[in-house]
Length: 225
Image (cartoon, rainbow, N blue to C red; front, top):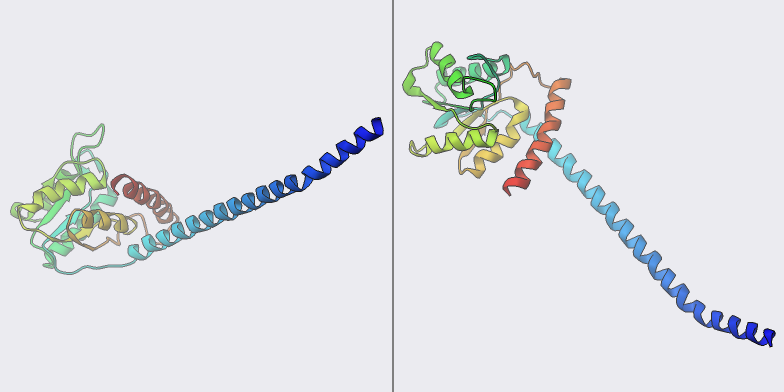
């Protein structure tokens, strides 16, 4: 009797085994497809980031200086009413552009940072005024804690003056992102990076800033579409 039951059990197991094998085979195929898909996504992501990094680097080495309606200086740190060395490098470059006749006005951007008394825009305006730029050629947009906020504030002031084409002045690593922001605001931006900043081209410090720019650009695109 026991032999008969054993034979029946073996027969039943044998009859079920093809189905089990098929299911296992399907599971392995699904896992392979999922694995290949995830790998493809990873490779695509790495390639996309690499291309973006190259675009940031290429723009950082590209000077588009040409006649424009206005020069727009992106603000950065100031020290108790005086521009930092990085900010001064941007302002001196804007001063050279203005004196060379590339644009009739200079727009200064940047709000009051936490703990500060002065806005970056007003510090920049005062510095250029000291260098002999007349008040009628200076526009201060003292609002904004980020690059995009500063450009929006500047854009609001430029709209009534029919300013469209602008020379953007900032550090080279910054150019790719601020050009995109200006384009999104409907402006026609031209990159005019300063080459005298303490953040020297091809320095370890610049590459570190470029890495930050990669993240900042992705954040801007994600938050602003």
